[in-house]
Length: 526
Image (cartoon, rainbow, N blue to C red; front, side, top):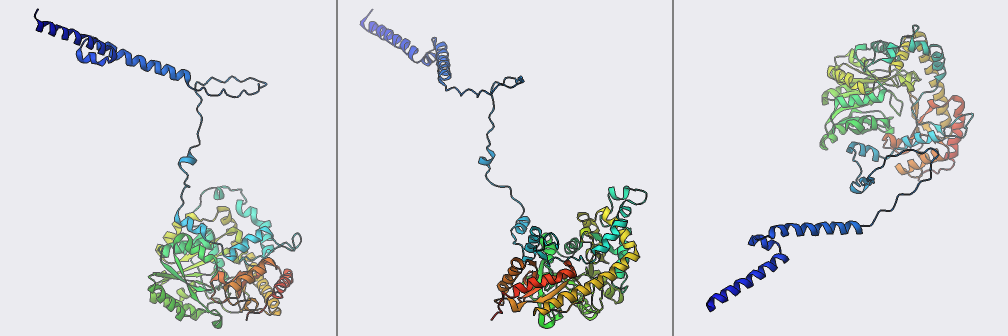
């Protein structure tokens, strides 16, 4: 063996030893070299992983043992659970936001109540009663007629059961679905009563009637049928505070006030209507109708025949509709003639399709609790739509059965109308006379439940703030609920609406004593 061969052999031996050592330290090297490293390269990592898991398992902190409950009298066998799942209330952490409601609901919820509705809430907290709570709050803000409740009560005691159930105890007519727009028998009875209420100056066709759950529902349905959201109606002021909710809330229709002034006895002029119509067009509003109340609420004045003709001419010229609210048609105490819009369109060649009448039985029958109103229209599209929309506000079947029986009793309805007018007249005279003796003048009215009183001499500052200060005194000092003119959109401060039909004649002196207490604390405005 030569020297060069020995050198080569030694190098080979040395390199072989090194490779064997490397295979022990880094087993995968053996895989590369192909000599036994595959077994070690697989076994050693697995063994290391196993021992690591064993170490972690033994050194992991143990959960505290569950609390030991006291032994029960009767032991209950509970199956063992390997692992108890703890419920984590993460919804509030992960989703802190509240569920959203519609912008319509937000708009209504954020609106502050006017004094009219504040008074209604106050009454429920401290209701006046002559015997049990004589110092309670006296309600003079709600348009409700209680003067003939005794007559209604007597009739109900005698006839209510048989009217609803019938002599044969027939349940089918009250326990099953009925037409949403009302029973035809009730439409016939209501048409006859309406003609009687207006002293037969107009005849009403039952087939043109759509019955609804109150006049408010009738007004809202008509608003939905006649105008789109963003359109507008002209409304003479002052007007009933309820119209803001009845028309605007769900339909999105705007109301454009048409100011009427005391210098003109708050009467409506075509000039004021035309001015408001023109201004609305400049603002980009599309006027679709005119809303009138006959008799006026809150003033109590009637629209005469000439005014109604002029309004129809105006509506025809501007191509708009008229909604005539005649809920007080039978509640009169004056001598002035009442003219229904239905009579005008029947007697003249006016376009019937643009005139729609709203009537309610709540006022003339002294039955607001039954909540019965109606739409009277000759417009086929409006009539068809209103019948379908009445599904959202139908009159209950028992109420309809009761009203059919009551209105069919001509002897009773005639007596009710006559007594209602007589009691309205006496109460109105007594109430207005009492205010006059205190130096408070009222507008002369002929119909309705209200007197429109000028109390501007009692406000400290001649503006809305001064008016509301007086309203607060009436509410807190005198415990009297009245409706300030600003709630009715009256542009002249100091006018108040008093509903005199919510008190009896014997309670009027008590009301005047309380009003006098307030007037003595007020100083005339400078």
